[in-house]
Length: 104
Image (cartoon, rainbow, N blue to C red; front, side, top):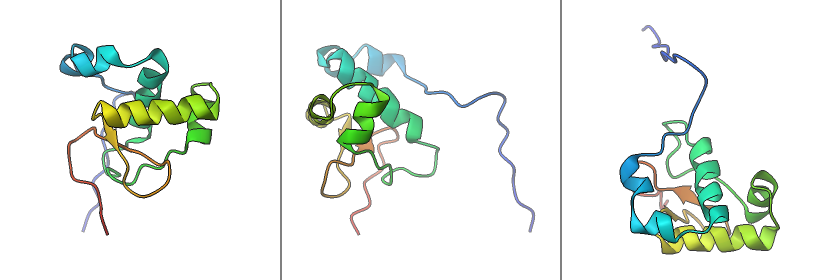
């Protein structure tokens, strides 16, 4: 069997679709929550949907902001239905592809 190599034409990037940017949910997010979504989307590699781990403390370092602000960003992303927790704790799954979260 031969292994397929990915054909990347450039460095990794985050794709934000216009329907997301034009949505009411996106416009109601705070700037920090928008940055949180982008940081979550950065972790998505095409095969890890439902397994993206992001704590509020780590998100606070990436944005940068306080961990309490990062936790509020996570909550606002859940409220806007742009992410959902895949397990207990403050880890989030980006709702990039719409695939169901792993529950087991």
